Length: 353
Image (cartoon, rainbow, N blue to C red; front, side):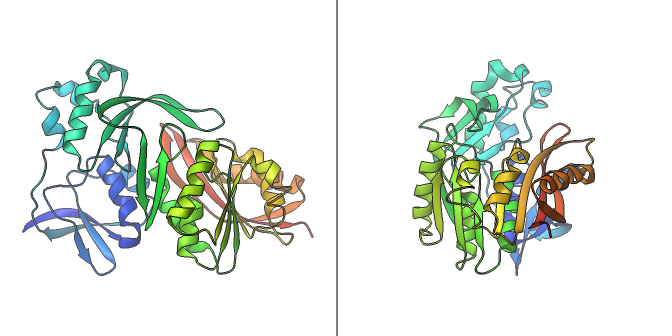
């Protein structure tokens, strides 16, 4: 046994918190995670900064606990030390994504000529990772996909990702997917009421839709996406998670579907397309039932933008569409770039009286 510092978090959010801490090399792999009642205590490998806690997006406590020791693999930096200089080690990204058995880095240009050995070091230091990719092009285009190169490992970019008791098959090179919305997905799922109808206007491979359906057997979910690859995986993931009776998939543009198949069907609308969700407020209005409902709107905000001022603009846009709104909650979900944040608004939307 060994005394160490840790983070205490509810088991419901443990998977999400572990993913973020591991991506920053902040989990002490020499110690075992403790499970006590409804909580996990995760041993920490270093100092946790305030920005790290904010990125978790859920309530946690910093504690001092007694942990059991565990056998461990060599750490990433142990594998890299001797290959890279101390200066170059400082440039290794603290943050990266692990999606199934695929690890995705975004290396700075200064490390580009050593990217292969860095990829091999990541592969050696991480359990259950099959390939390591370097992100070479930012997310772009109608389908929100990036460009990647293989640094280490074998096989393609299709993988199986697990979250909150659900499984998702996807190809990271053909669809948009981020594990960093894990806490937001379970938060929204927990808000859905029995008997509700949910419209997921930018569903991708189905993480919001399927988690909602699995956690709420009495709901109906309409999930649509314009990317044919995402739609194919959405259909397959509905089958894999056995929610065919609760989730219906659509291939097409959300605005067009909002005046046909989805017109006036939803109690709750999910709009997880932060780069352009505001352009589809009319689709949200059309998809809501005539008496209105709740819209979960995701947008990007620059650091100096006041969220209250932003909401005032959204409120005015809905007013021009013939609706009145009430802000239920808003939150910073994650940092997507220096001084740029993914922000969420939960908004009650009703027709004007």
